[in-house]
Amino acid sequence: MAVKIAVANQKGGVGKTTTSICMAQELKFRGKRVLFIDTDSQCNSTKFYEAQIKDAATFVDILCGDEPAADCIQETAKGFIIPSDPLLSDAETMVKVDERRFTHLKRSIRSVEKDFDYIIIDTPPSIGVALKNVLAMADYIVIPVEESGWALDGLMDFAHAIELAQDNNEKLSVAGILTIKAKANTKKSSRMADLASSIAEKLGSTRFETMIRESVACAEALTEYYVPLHEYAPKGNTTLDYREFVNELEARING
Ligand SMILES: Nc1ncnc2c1ncn2[C@@H]1O[C@H](COP(=O)(O)OP(=O)(O)OP(=O)(O)O)[C@@H](O)[C@H]1O
Ligand SMILES: [Mg+2]
Image (spheres, rainbow, N blue to C red):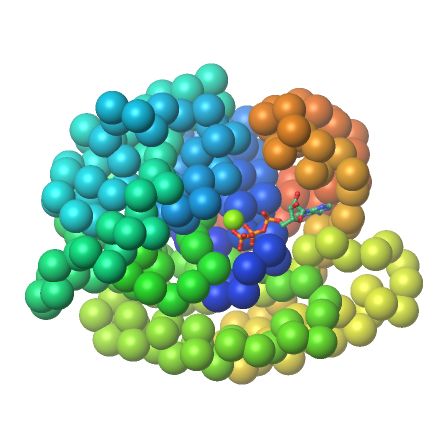
């Protein structure tokens, strides 16, 4: 059965999409069977995968129409994906309010879980119906953080949402806090390590030793050229960091 890992943080622009894509691409590079799910109406990872939205079944159909996941999966040059749709921002408010509203995704993917080793989920920067559906089905959450005075803001609300989800999803745990855009060997990176550790402690987890360094190549590869980072910059700092991070993540999951 697939291990289901969500990359989440209720804050915007902290590297959720970058981390989920780099993780999924690294695992695929290692020969793992990976399914990517985009649950954000911004559709950033859907664009990276160059998946179809028009005339295609998407995450919106899962949330609003109980579409089986098998009918929403597209295979692109970058792998298997269930795309999102910009309509999701409206659709979220139209999900029927009943006791099943947070388990649409969980029920939908059940029949395809055996076909994959990993299901990696990119999430939106808000705690709404989409994210709650993710928390109801995920096994692990990776929380990317970036140094800023506001890194801790909203995190307690997120911790509370995780706790609530754990009432119905006993498997759910925080795999760790991942520091992104780290400046190598500077005082800032050690401050960042302390900050990440304190965030992790509040969530009953620890920070990953690996920090993802900042690089121009990272943004270029994913947002301009739609190329996996390990192909665009095979020996780049950020590529090596994501590789090391996946080693650490797999050790935590399997250990
Ligand atoms: N290691 C890195 N080095 C340089 N730029 C990075 C790095 N990681 C992420 N970025 C850039 O930071 C910006 C935000 O990253 P990303 O889109 O992954 O965040 P996000 O949390 O998914 O945002 P949102 O909340 O809007 O979905 C992007 O422009 C991305 O290219
Ligand atoms: Mg994003």
